[in-house]
Length: 269
Image (cartoon, rainbow, N blue to C red; front, side, top):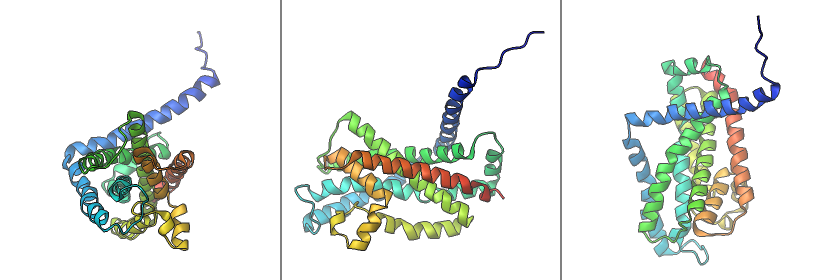
C-alpha cells in the first residue's frame, strides 16, 4: 500500500496566506451581495456629501473666511468631503454586525474554520468598496463645479486605495465599539457622539495651522487627517508626506482589524 508523501512545509506556508486572502475576499463579496437588495443605498448615501460640497463649499468660497493659500476653497474642500463620506458610512457599520448577531447569522459565521480576523477584514474592506461609489459621485460633482483635479489614472487609483483604507479603519472602530456595547441603540448614540468630533478634529474643512494647540495635537493622532492629506496630495497636488499618510492608514486599518477581531466573540455569547 503506497503512501502519498506529505507536502513540504514550504508549500503549506505559501498556501496559508493565499487561503487567508481568499477568505477575506469571500466575506467581502458576501457583504457586497447585500447591495442587490437595496441598490438605492448607494445613491441616498451620496446625497449628504454632495450637499456639503455644493452648499458649504460654495458659500465659504464666497466668504473667504478660511485661508487656503493659492488654492480655491472649493478645491481644498473636495478631498475632505470624500474622506467625510467614507467616515459617515463606516462609523455605523457595527450596527449591521449586531443585527447579524440578533438574527443568528454571526454565530454560524464564527463556527466556520475561517479566522475571525478574516471575517472582520472582509466586512471592513466591503465598507471601503461601498464608499468608492460615493467618492466617484463627489469627484464628478466637484468636476462639474470647476474644481481643478488631476485625472491621472494611477493617482485616481491611489485615491480609491486611500478611501478604502480609511473606511476599513472606521468600520473596524465601529465593530470594536459594537463588541463593547453589544446593543444597536448604544452604538448609534456613541457613533453620533464621535462622528462630528472626528470630522472637525481633522484638516477636512480647514488647515491644521488654524486649530488651537490642544486640537492640533488631537488632529495628529486622527487617521482622518492623514487620509485627507493623502487625498489632497493626489487630487490637487498639495504637498504631503505620502509614506507617512499611507503608513498611518495601513497601521490603523490593521490595528482596527485586530481590535475588532478580539471583541467579536463577545457579540456571539
